[in-house]
Length: 277
Image (cartoon, rainbow, N blue to C red):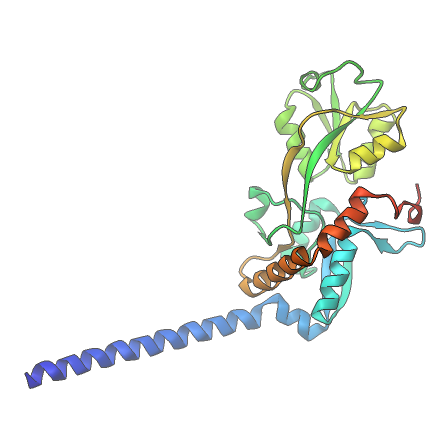
């Protein structure tokens, strides 16, 4: 019996020691992850660097050359709530994820929809906005055409290189030609000039552009393409940053701030006189 008790004591001691060691290892690992988080870098530097690409009304320049738009409101409030300054880094869309991975900025806040392909390279927060794509067409070139008629070798679409519309157009209209441009404005201008039949963009851009050019543009009726949420994109392996950003986004939804700012930029044109037409 004494031997059994002694063995039991040794066994219990080993279990306790293992538990303490495991607990210490877990605590050390957690602390190390926290120290390596971009949140700590932002706090130490006193500035959050945000990558974005310019497209109306997400982010654009006003008549004075200053950046305005929904993403700018989000980024500035985020920085204010963190108690730091904010630096916006305009970047071409096709290079925006590689620049994040390379460390050119801390996070992407640029109306980026969450896709499986992008998620292989970066992590996404919970959605801070939602949108879907609609087709904006040249009225004269597409007169009498149905949605099905657009899937033809005789039809030319335009889109911004690397953006979601380019992928969605290729998937849904594989027979049509697709011209790619570096900026949304250039792809839309081709349709406006009659050099292409149609383009695709997140609402409310198609409705707004058709309203401004009713003699030339029309929005093809139908369900929105690729409806999905848009999230902040951040580098992989940073649970501390993911936790912080998700909690911040959740609070802005609960307070109504995100909805109010989104409605201002996407459901009104109260801001239109600030930008060159």
